Image (cartoon, rainbow, N blue to C red; front, side):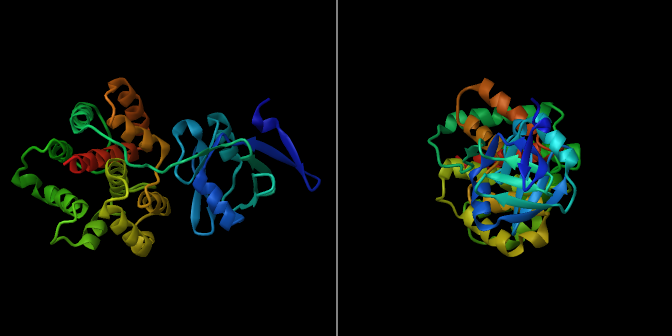
Length: 315
């Protein structure tokens, strides 16, 4: 029976019942602090809730699970999203492990797999990573990937050349300087204004998650898997995001940066970073395509951030 036809009674009312397949452990932590929320924003196949100051994303589990996400079967996510209205009240029923949305729908998390989004340090072979970086960068060069980081074909070529450590020309000195500043922040070198660097990147670009945010999230993921918590970049980013984040970027962009600074990431991003450390090109190809499918440019912008972070990290 389709979940849309399942019913559950509550206080004599008939509520339409839905089942979640997965839920981030972080979501359950949010519910421990806040039991009442509202519908924040609605998209074609997913929607966001707000509980206190924290956002919760509900969408298709096939599209991966955000660090603050709940995943449903794809068709059910589409159907439920079409029923939701903005600013509807949402309650967390801790006893029954379910969300009550607008006193009309129940989203049960009772059987949901609890997902861990912490990306921890892993052992790696720098030669394997370098080979995989070159393979992914080659695909970026020769395929029609959409990135919000480059406004022209020349800028896209520069980004690729920078990732491959090629020489730069006078025409792309400005971009080179911005990437070089990021590298100086990561390596904790003197003479760089960290706030100025983050001011440039955070909130840069269009969309729910601006391209600059995606780039930084990808870099954070690389550094998490290569060096764990023993780097200053995450600490500096967390301080900046907590103080200035909501003034600089979107609510969704802020959420991803907030968790990235604490080594928590989207499930597809975790899989992609892990695949870059392996020798199996077929595995890497699969997760690469999953990453590219995220948003209009977000997936590619995040991939570029991962490549940049790996390039810096293995040195």
